[in-house]
Length: 210
Image (tube, rainbow, N blue to C red; front, side, top):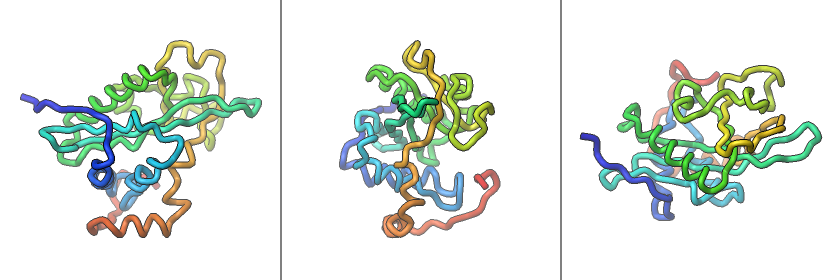
C-alpha cells in the first residue's frame, strides 16, 4: 500500500532542507554538479517568486519533493510584454524517484496555479514526462523560444494553457526569467554558497547536456 503523502506550502524552517533536497535531486543530472539549489535560494527574494506556489511534498513527515513557480513574460512582435508563468526546479529526492511522486506534485501545483488565475505556463523539459501533466510543444501555441528559429518546433520548450482562451490571438517570444541565471552571473557568490554543503563529486555522465 502506498504511503499517504501531504503537499503544503513551504515554510521558512523548510528552506535548508529543501535546498539540500534540490541539490541531491539535480546533482550530476544535467551537468557535473548542479546550480538549481542556488537558483531556489536566490529566488525567494526575487519579486517574480510566487510563495503560494512554493510547495513541498511530505511522506511520513519527511520532505521528499518540492516545486517553485515564477512570473515570466512573453515579448510580442510590437515589443509589448504579455504575462505568463513558469515553474522549476521541481525536485524529488533520489530515493523516491520513478515512483510517481513528481507527477503527483506537479499536477497538484498546476491545479493550484489555475485556481489562482494563472493562465499559461511555459517551461523547458522532457516532453516524454511533461506530456502526462498536459504539456505540449510551445510552438503549437505560436510561442517561440528566444534562441531558436522562429518557425521551429523546439523539442524541449513546452507550454500549457490553464485558462481557456488566455492565449487567443497571441504570438510571441519567450525568454526565461533572469532569476534562473544567478549562478552564471555571480559565480563567486555561488561557489561561496556551495561550499556550505557536504562535499559531492562532480561527474561527467552520459545523458548530460553538452
